[in-house]
Length: 261
Image 1 (spheres, rainbow, N blue to C red):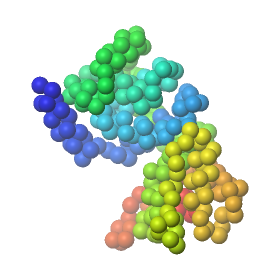
Image 2 (image 1 turned 90 degrees about the vertical axis):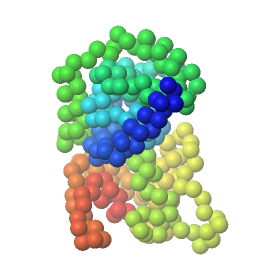
Image 3 (image 1 turned 180 degrees about the vertical axis):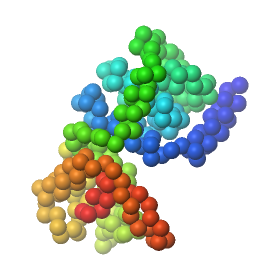
């Protein structure tokens, strides 16, 4: 039975990756990562990556992400004593179960991967059971909020560092040689994992600004990043950009701004 569930998970997960709507899912997860209820200590973690990885592993669709968001806002962000990664898995699994989605194969996947997952999840679920009643009206409101065009929030630099790291391979961006040293043997990674987001920003900017004459030191780099962030928050619409095959595609305005560095 266990092997059958694991095989079913692998099959369903492959189909999910092929059929999901990545643009809508990413937009919703970005909105979640800007929540004002996120604890201070959690803001120094790669939130967007954790949210994205959790959504993929749980195979969350857009409706389930709306419920996931409601639960995070209602009781998730205030949880203590649980790692953020595990907490997101618990809440995502609860979101699926609350609207009747099939989860047996997903739970078996985590039982295989994470020690004592089922036992700990049940204890946690008993603890939050009284908070998970949800109405269709609430789901609809959360869904519309996460996919709305209007999006204003404070600048969360950790979010942008996280996004830069995800969209920018260390040495090449869209075919351009990037951050190449004269001696290839002396290359260093863009970033070491640290808890201090200020150190992360400093190191990212140093590498982004390398060999760029228009960035004079960290002060100029911070100014440039700040301008990009503000422009992104002021306009989240997409614009078309030319492709190499003479076609056109839509690009997030943030990526367009980033290319101007």
